[in-house]
Length: 254
Image 1 (cartoon, helix red, strand yellow):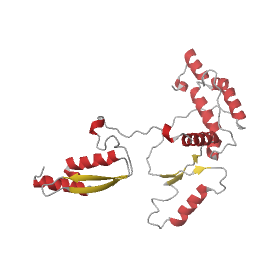
Image 2 (cartoon, one colour; image 1 turned 90 degrees about the horizontal axis):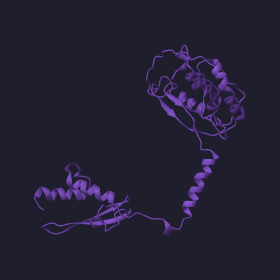
Image 3 (cartoon, helix red, strand yellow; image 1 turned 135 degrees about the vertical axis):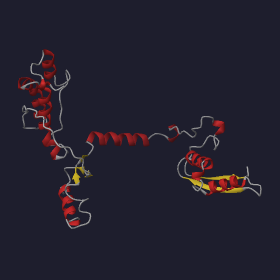
Image 4 (cartoon, helix red, strand yellow; image 1 turned 60 degrees about the vertical axis):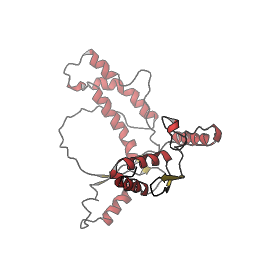
């Protein structure tokens, strides 16, 4: 709801504009000295000012809501104060461009300016006379840092990994079969075993033929791929076994 378009805001509109956050909730923002890309930290006060300004019908309502957010910013180390901005609706020409985004993880411990080095290498290896200059230049390649996990997330993931490794092996339940009918399981209730060598026997009029295969994923996956190749001719050449089956079908052997 854009309240600025209302020439005479009602009482309900004023209440909505004043209520910028949920009751009994205090806004919190990342600290100015946190390990985040500087551009993100720099833009936080401006983004908050824009959001509250857009939700307020006029400057007086903005000033009623701003103190709580100014306090939250000050607690996080920001010196900037929120300012009321008037939204200007301008039609911009939208043109879709194909861009390549480079998203390196950001850390304040890294002293090298990754973005500067990236564009220096672009200018060096893809000058204007290069045949790939139109694909790799400062307009088509963009940089956007990704945030590293905070210490809480690092400790939580490490504790989860350590606790899972400390569980006794006999307490971890492993599912060995996914067949609806266990009596029809191709491996006698152990079709989900992986890293196995299996043997298939094809009965022919001239004598039985054996086929040896290896399956790194669960055997059920390999078994389903075999049966699929037996039913559909377009998969005839997937394996030597499927070639043999279709050869027998073409000869009319059962």
